[in-house]
Image 1 (cartoon, helix red, strand yellow):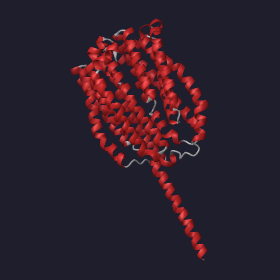
Image 2: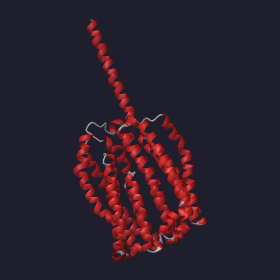
Image 3: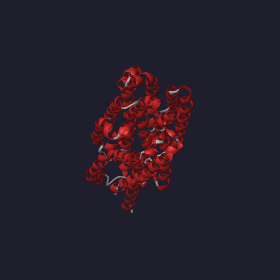
Image 4: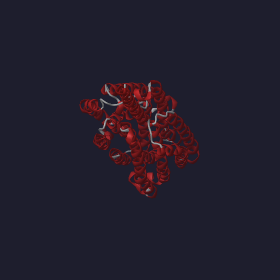
Length: 436
């Protein structure tokens, strides 16, 4: 959560500086590039970040090889998908035609998709193996470097300075962090997890494969729907309106990362210590209530003032949108918590059906209401979608609250029961032998 808060504040600073240095049209175009890069990367990560958080704490051996395999799979797929986007997007949408005329930006974009995939996965590796304390340092340096590059990029990157400033620090951060992971994190985990249960021993191969596939398709649908929102806006309303949309969108989704951080922590800590499931779920719900609700109320009240540092135009056109999107964050928290619990319980249907439904409703409602009511319609669509989702998923949360068991905990109890039964059988046999 400290890492997320630091990244959030510096991220808002980045867009505030960018809004003053660059034009609204440039911000709208480059923010669409950033969103495209992140959207493609999310799909190409194959949900491995959640797989790592959920299952890596239970791996007994070859941890480094498994991490490297995840990097290679996601990074290679990202390169292919990024290249496909650069080649096809200009022909599908005239507003992305600049990708066809600037070869250097196209190359940077394709490479950035792969680097961002690895950058995201390495954070999951650090959190899952007990080195989350490194995250504020890594993300703090990365976020500060982006801001520092903004005025310099205006000189050497021309009209694409925002995008170049955003992605360039990744190229420096990823090699350094992964060298530290290889030398310190993985050797420590190999020693600490020698007695872990193992994933297949708890789930079995067929059930695990089914769960992973359902989790992947559900998570990909949800992530694409969120990240595609700026693309829908820029396609329907143009780059200028997308600039006014992107700042409230960034504030709301950045704030949502606090809830995601709690859900991630809950996932990996319960996976590491299943017997603490009840205690940890209570702590997660408490933190949601104590931290999130007051901040949401404050942002709703002070929305125009919060947007004023970005410029008067952003405050005038984006205040209502920010209020609607930040109000939805409370309801998104319910969905994040539900998905973390479904992941812990190994229930793939609880991941794929709700997330695909949310994605379909969100995309269609943004397209429908956005074309009719502009940016306010986009905000209404955003809020209504997550209010409905939270209402439908709350009974599942209540069920886990009453009975917080996960497969690893049940397997341990079963194994303990088997040991007790065998001990009693041995004792009975010994007693009979003594009698004879």
